[in-house]
Image 1: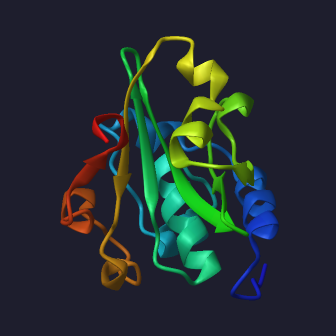
Image 2: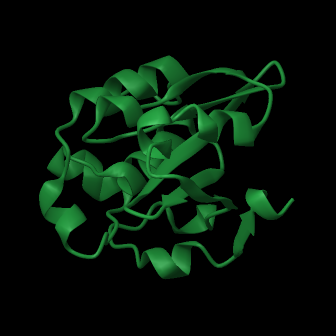
Length: 154
């Protein structure tokens, strides 16, 4: 399958929805695959999906990291007409992308109701190093050198 890049947000979400969830990678301490590797293996977990989404959109990513007492979830932040939305990959249908209808990132994060069932502990925004996206193997700790900004502290 040849992809025409850049894609628009709805095309990216449809493409991510078509990929099987990568349970094997998710079980390995959430190691991350580069967008190129995800395209080769044709499966992804949430962080892979967020990074692949940015790659397919051809835009530097802004990642939103949601954390609660049971689990974590990662989505790619999107914005249109000053409204926020997301592109996301998940094994749960409640955690997929959202249309750009939210007035703030906090409002977007709170829309993940199934996730919030356990109490949203933190919402962070991460700015990955865009220059590392063309590599096959990514050490995710080195891709996120710019630190986290907690929105719950704002």
